[in-house]
Structures are given as C-alpha cells and as structure tokens.
Length: 65
Length: 190
Image (cartoon, rainbow over all chains, first blue to last red; front, side, top):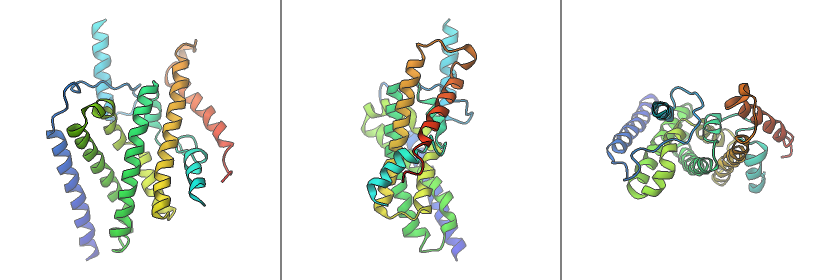
C-alpha cells in the first residue's frame, strides 16, 4: 500500500510540474520583455538555462565587430 | 538556540556560500554588477522561503505520517521546480515590470542547489515551523549579502590592472577564497 501511495504522490507532483510548465510556456511574455539579456558572466555550467542566451548574445556582439 | 541566534548563524556564521560552498553558480555568474546581484538575491529569498515552507508542510503533513520519509528528496525537487514555474507564470501575468527585472533569473533559481539545501536542512535539523521560517529567510539573506559584497568587489576590480592569466573567473575565485578564509574566523561563535 505504501508503495502505491508513494507512486501516487510522485505522479501527482510530476503532473503538477508538467501542467505548470505547459501553462507557463503558453503564457505570453509581457511587452518589452521578449529579448531579455542575461547580465551574467556565464560560469561555464553547460545545462544552465541562461548559458545558451549568453552565448547567443556573445556571438551577436562578435558578429557586429 | 533562540531565533535571533539562528538567524545570525544562518546568515553569517554558517553562510551558505562561504562555509558550505553551495550556490556557487549564481554567485560567480550573477555577481558582475550590483543591480543583477540585488535582483537575483531578492528572487532567491522569495523562492527559498516559499519553497522551504511548502516542503516543510508536505513533509510533516503527508510524508511523515505515511512513513514515506525516504521520498523527501524527490518530492522537494518537484515542489521547488513546480513552485518556480508557478512564480514565473504569476509574474508574467500580473507584474511585467517585476518580470523584466527578475524573469531572467527565475530558471537559474530552479537549478540553484541552495534552495534544495535549505528545504532538506530544515527537516534534518528538526526545526519547528517558526525556526524553519527564520532559517529560510536567514540563509538566502546571507546569500544575497555575499552576492552584493562580491559584486561591489568585482565592479572595483574592473578598473584595476589584473594580470591577464587571472582576469575574469580566476581572480574571482581567489577573492572568494580570501572571503571564505575571513568568514571562517566566525566559526564556532554559536
């Protein structure tokens, strides 16, 4: 019984996460916030959400020069 | 331990960055300017406080009575991730100005191990609800304090003639190590 409850709790939390993630993605970004640029030195952690944006920004800067 | 001592201990003596070396990613990444340090610090205080109280409630209301204590790690991770999604959604809908200043840091908070550390620490230390609240404010306040101090040092460093090999993160790590050394003198006060 305990195992079933444990699985149910996990599934509930995963479901809640998925629901909020989808709702979050569907919610439009407020006006003027479409291209927020990270003021971040990019510490080098590959899976950081900001790193890809930071690298794109750097590439754009290098392209301009 | 009274609440004031707990707060000072969480904020300064057992500072999460300088004594535990947790949350180093945003500490190095977002400490380049004072504005971003303050933004990130405020966002971390809010998220850590709410996520810790939620995790505390989940543990003592559901997991402990059902003898599912071993589930706390996975549950807390999911609670933190869900809460950050909710906060981002809420801010997007209700406060564009706040989203403009904090929105970029919210995904970074999800991967900030400091949030999980505080939630787990409250349970491990068997804090009461009041102690949990104080600890959940003190720890991120210490994080914000260090972030602000470090950002001002890094801002001043920009004007200095740092040898090429030490420019950027290397000199930042050396400064962090010296700060950790200084703060280690506070160890054992409480």
